[in-house]
Length: 234
Image (cartoon, rainbow, N blue to C red; front, side):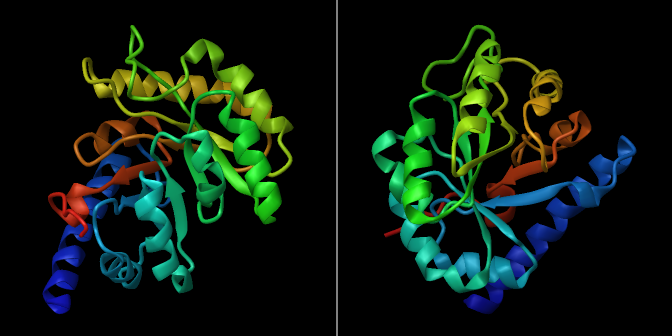
């Protein structure tokens, strides 16, 4: 089973990497500028280990209760773990214990909670500000409205153990993804001046990664196109 699963993942990764390369070349970008983050939610740690053998360096999870044990089972792999789910304050310490990047910071109350947790654990956590690009805003999907991004960025910059590392968004349910991603990239350009260092624009998933790459995304979050349909962990 492991052999056939490895072959399946390898074939899927080849397809996704080809899509990223084609999308990048089409707009004159270097494909090496784009990091593929594989969303491993609902899939077992064995798949994470297989992905690592295939050259994947970044994986993402959206539920703390699933992510924490999976990280523990794969701690020897040296992967970069992204948390992309809506974060609750009472989960901040747990998430800070394993996440290298939290992509879903979208409100002020999360900043001190995550900062205190990271400081207590002696860790430094990269933070992406999740932006709601819908007009009007879409409650329940997460994201700070564009007008409040700068203020949230300042809070992260003032934190002891957090690093402002970029922005993240999910395309609105209605409307063209490309237009939404263009807005995110424009917003990122204005916010980037708030802090030094590497800058990430996390946008695009299995169905719209080409649009995200064309807009200027540096990270694409891909799940089903690599791993297949959702697998429910038992």
